[in-house]
Image 1 (cartoon, rainbow, N blue to C red):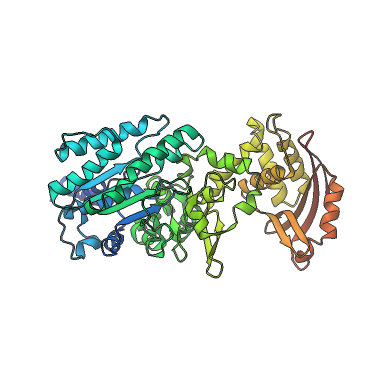
Image 2 (image 1 turned 90 degrees about the vertical axis):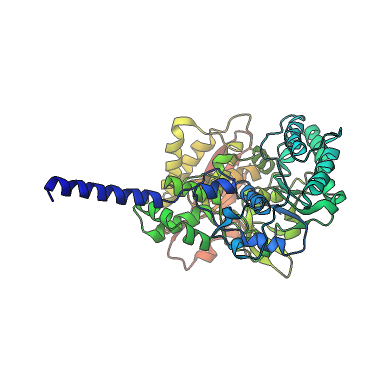
Length: 539
């Protein structure tokens, strides 16, 4: 063989190998929540079909599942849709394909309310009418009722009669019109009544129904949306369905090995270190008493696709009401983010309650840390670094406005001063930072000042704790680094000397007597009139 031929063969061989590698490359479906599209497109799919088997063998007809946004609720409903439509070819190789299900198709009514913003009262009518017209044509309904509730009732019964099979009803984001109008009372009430009338058909049409499965962010309490559906099984906190949405650690390691390896190469770190990065930023969710730790699927898929660790979930939109509720409730931020609550109280959203904790949980900013069976309470926590950064970045402007080009210099001064054991530099930078508080953003009380201080220090990556209990009191702010401990007492319209005296009188530093690190005791005074840090004393 000539040298030219040998070179051509070598080139073709390399090309073939490259093509094989490209064909084996994992495809991540970013934003695609259609099960058929994922399967036909050869995209990565985490097998959640064991939960379908659990549903069809339970004897329960009505289900409700609440999860935060971007957690795979829509994909699970889509999977249910194609399963009940009898599309067995899409399930080849998945768990459910190995069961004795007969794959006979059922009529499926997939009511997707996630497709609109509902900023006007007529938007829901548009969504319902589009769906109902399609179903009325499909099942040959010519006499159209005047109300949407009656139209839906007719569609359910006719779908049963025409196919001989009871109907499967899937409602995606049942509460989207309500969540989008939490601050618009007229719109909220309009949508509440309309949805209650639509959902009332689930009970009155029970003889025609095989399964109802609703998903959403919250189960609204005291609003009568489900007043007629008292047999609805809420699996939001059910241990048997804890992992139905999201990615467990076992699923991550089994399904994302290639992506984790790509991330490790991009970050020039080991495979194990890449796993730690993913865990710190996207893991930490828990949705039941005994549930596994869950990774945010939206963030993991984006991190794998982009080979980068960024705040992907927060970029999908932080509800403004979260920041407003926290600010207006005048709560201690650190305490709220580490609260202990009754599990039952987290399941419903009472709009009359000023406490923002349930809202924070249901929207994904808090999750279950542990469960105490004796008291039926859970301790809550912020799930991971991604959520903390996103939440605190949104909260900080409610307390302190950014300062443009000088901001980075101030933050660097705070960070370097703390890490290098130079509290004077840290306090000077803090004073400069708080000097930027505009007139219309007043620090109405001591709690707001404490919150701003805590959020700021945490955002720049330091280990800060607020309201730390001791045997004789509570430390306002405790900051720890590998070399230093900072015990900070913040006084609002009082002297820094008084603050330092409280540290000594309460013996806040006693617990660090045997610690090798240098301990700084710092008293800081803040003026409500000037909205400035007036002074400090360091000991």
